[in-house]
Image (tube, rainbow, N blue to C red; front, side, top):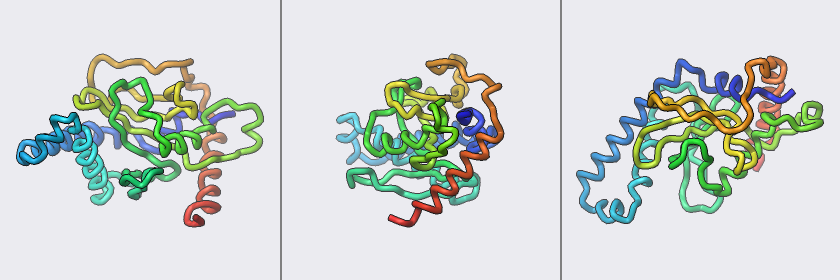
Length: 218
């Protein structure tokens, strides 16, 4: 039986920690706006429509600080993009990797760049694949995506991306910013009866084995 993505997300990023998300995003957006206002040299970047990069840097720094202070009980690392043009923040929960992305549309996955594509493939345990439940094949550590509004901070979601980019998400939380209008996830509903404690435990064991076999071996 496949692992229920909602149950896995609740295990990896518990609901009691989620109020940190809107408050941290608001602080990071304000910090980015202040930085732009106080630095005339950034004006040309803003006019080129690149303020999103400044926001992304500010958001990464803010969540990195949450880990450093212990407010988020995760580890973190700064990972290289597949093409070495910089690094991105990876928050490391007990059995998953969480990355952060600005998106224009809350129901659509971010742009299909290679590093996200590779991470998405690790989410096959959330699909009902014939024979998978017996093989326990894991392509990598499951990927959770924290998305937030592009330019305007009007939504934020924790998401389990579907391994197929065009199918968007296996599960997506309600809007964590508290906006009254919540867009429902696309695709078939995920019933609470999908929960299988053995499936969750098996996936966590598979992640631990994957880390023993692969992390640090490259």
